[in-house]
Image (cartoon, rainbow, N blue to C red; front, side, top):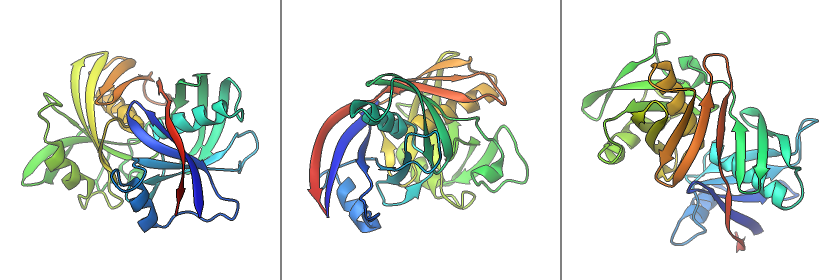
Length: 276
């Protein structure tokens, strides 16, 4: 099987975008892993597969596969790339469009082919939505991990996130705590782990250890999750600049019951064909 793809990135979070084959065949878990390899394959954090619309009023349906081959619910940077991809090839108009995904309908504002805003929906703090094993919903949860106790905020952005507040992302123990929290037994479907440094009320720094991928240069849903947790703790304003290793995102959330919006770049790296 030959796969024609476009390699893209949103603030350094790199994805491949392609149309689902007509016969519906997709790479196996092992093939996804081989394709994601940065030395022997294409190299990517996520693969975004575009399918025909499943609902009226939508431009397309997309699926997301992590570098480990697992299919997941959402990818904020990836959906910006999908919108930009559709615009570039003439399959989406300027302005607002709606895409469909495993996490539901996603509203998108296309400013131009390199700048896209995405309505990520309202953050869901119910532990069952992640899922996360907790007796009741709380602002902060103690978690025993890697021989120590940490405090996390837990929120679903269509996919599960745990957020730790740290004094400095530069010295945060991402390599040690990230994989340990990702696979903690209280997260039966694993979890994305964000390490957030609050610079001021309108600016945070963030590193994210993504479920099934490892640390990435950016994570759109992780940026939304961090701002949601920081806002819930009363430490952030409604609009926050999120500084990630790969670039910056703008996150806006007006509070409980409101949808959270993410604004950021989408860029093409290259196009290619690979034999699977």
